[in-house]
Image 1 (cartoon, rainbow, N blue to C red):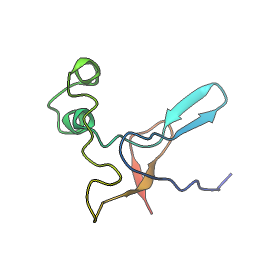
Image 2: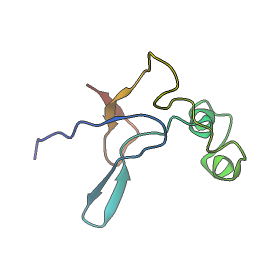
Image 3: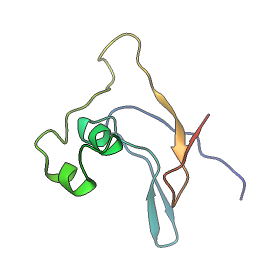
Image 4: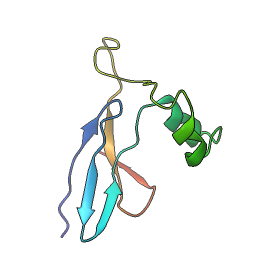
Length: 83
């Protein structure tokens, strides 16, 4: 207990944590659909069927300066902890 897992990610590469029988998604995708969910344009259900659901907003090789997320979502919450 008390240990931390540090994750850096880009694009739609996800990190998950399995605790007992529960599986928690620790990072959010850098996709158009995820951004639409975050801003309230689409619901999770709508985004799952949207034709633009797989369009990446950030990915390796896109540009020289890239904002890589350095943080983790606490299991069982949507609260993000930056590091």
